[in-house]
View (cartoon, rainbow, N blue to C red):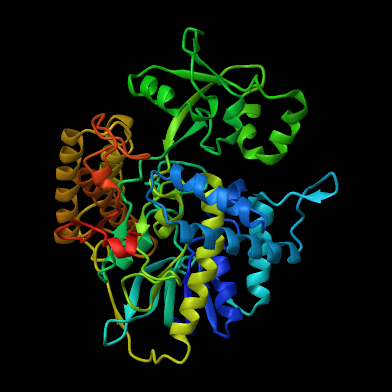
Length: 515
């Protein structure tokens, strides 16, 4: 048994987790960060470029930005939260510059609106380590711990590189920064994003919000899984017979592409609209996008290449744990959420966070959650703890890989999750509910490392049920949620909550919170 004690435990080593650890340490807390992978290299941010919602401190410009993006959010965002995110992100990017991040310079001015993921996360890991935080790499968490009154008091899991030894960290507060859920779709960098944190929180009664806004598919070359799509603004699309597909905006061609792919037809793209002077810069910014194409002998600026759509779920989507305070506290005492594991509705509403929203949200929510957890956790007694959770942890007859395939069969297809119908959602929910009942009654086979796979399979099942339950409850089309061709309705200009495990439920968020 590996045991540690801390004021704050951060679960997750992506940007949100790293900023949370830095903020908690700066507040005087003793911090442990446990990552499912290797902090600084795992997760979608570390695998590619990352835009930021970065606005200089000009009051008029910031007001214009917030107003414009509020309307883009389908009126589900919150102007106060958006202004907070813009302000916090700007200040923390100043910190990143002081960490030595090499921002590019054009005409004598640093350009701070985007980050190279590998370099960014390398700097963040180094800074977290130098701040005195204990980093536990390859230490996935399996369950949360609570004290006798039900307050979160740490977590437990397995050390993958130490013979699957069990570990326990008792802490005064916990920050979940475990990412969203991409359902092991193969989207680049998302193999660690299986919704584990959401399940651990829900087992303690946490509420979720915005889970209907989870039907995000990224365009990727058929030869790879890289969904960083900003370069697609320069794309021309073609049908299988070479006929050009007319799209209103090349960057937002997903609907036209998806309709063809859902009908079983192939779609090709060519980046022939990219100016010659930008082509090398595009390669430098997103080398992982071009690598599989180069290996296949394809010049994407000259040759059409086949594309596909890959589900990114709540990684690029909006839904996650409901937060009820400026410090990103969840509805469970002692538990805080940051980054993709938390709902992003306060800043992006009903639309995808994309790169800019997501990057800024990870920085700001991580900072707030770390500070809040430090205030809560400093001095709290955590000598007596009780483990929570059981789904996927009880050995049984079900095979984890088969559970994952069953979930993917309901959640990955375009004709189920992107082009949503009431009948399709109900049919998928019936299958997923039956699968959940089997997980909890029969158990999932696995010991050692297989316990992690079993737990992740259970988490994906729970995640899919919340997504579809919320989608059925929002009987309209808003933002990325499209249902039966229904129009957007003013009567649904509010957020929907979802929760529960054995029996899932939905409700309307109180207006005083959603305002």
